[in-house]
Image (cartoon, rainbow, N blue to C red):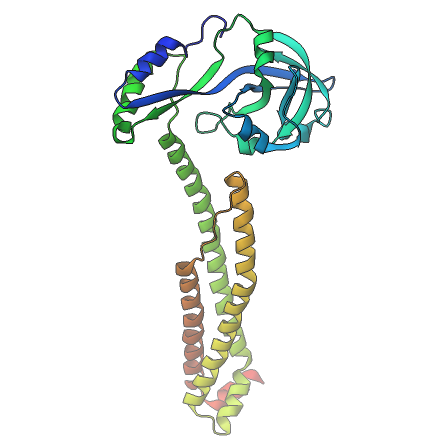
Length: 329
């Protein structure tokens, strides 16, 4: 920065000359800083408090208040969770650039609500916020603290503007461009991995459930072989036995389906809300009922009960009543 910020006026004019670019906005002014107490040392990006971000920072405050003097700063809550001595009112040493100053933590902010880093992992998000006067006091030799710009473009010419900007910065190793599409693609890839893992887990649970259903139904039918043979001996017809077995299977399947819905649905809604809050900075994504998966589950559940019940009844009918009663005695 002291040697010359690459985000200077000449670059701004070059960008503005690109067809489709409407405006160039300084979204972050920042320096890398280190901060320490007598027990711990940490590091991260320190952003300047500006009129453009002051309201967002204030909305992200968890405790304390916006700095009212030059030597007060805001710190991310992620550090206070691991270092008890980095709390509101604590005094720390701040090394901003090459200069050291003693500052007071006036407030703590939720970093998830101020995720302003670049790149897929956003590793350079702000962990500190300090007043502009502190930046100027420590580094009067730096003319511009601009760390990143937002390029406003005409939606109709967005693709052309993006390709032109890529060409413009291609030969400059100290510049990089971060696009919304890159973030969207990364989020899609990350979400697909998580969703695929959960889908694989749900299919495993589904298969275990089917195997358990088969074992339970067959065990139940086998244990009632003698009972069924006695009923047949006193006049129960094959159709009546089949209907009875199918009806019992349907009752078992209906009870299982109602149990899944009554217990699983509220739990799913709660988990969806909790996960979406963590993933989308407090925003709750509406729960969508999995009609296709649930329909498949019910189809297999009721279908297996019918097939297994009919199969067991037909198998028993092939044996004589005397053989069945002897087998159970």
